[in-house]
View (cartoon, helix red, strand yellow):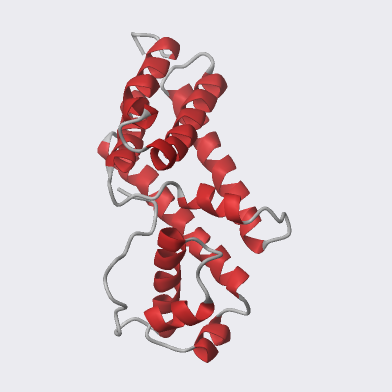
Length: 202
């Protein structure tokens, strides 16, 4: 379950042009960086042209924002899958979330968090993608806090912040010092944090 866009397959000609453009852009932005990818490369990867791209998106910035909205939607599907796998068991859902993040960190195809990567490249608060990034991160942290509370953590907000920051830091560390660095111990550290906060009987 990967909330990032990692699609190495060629553009599917059966898809409408807009969908091909978004899929190609998401992949290129994630793999190469937003600033490094031009609209020509996106159009070529999508099997279309710049005129068609601009017919669907008024600017590259709007296309970036749409890609990040897709990332957010995929992240929501991850939460839904966790809830479906562990119905009425919030403690197990917390552990499943920790395990999912651990799996992303161990995946050699990963290039960190698409939202964090975009935030670093797009510091301008007026960029249309900034509101997408900020809303996504706030929603993820708040959902985690609600889950921690449901799991019985007396200081659910604090636990959510610990887990959120561990995950954010692990993703960055995974890119900077590799998979054998501190990121390799994310699951152990996160589960230790949960054990400190959640009563054994919960």
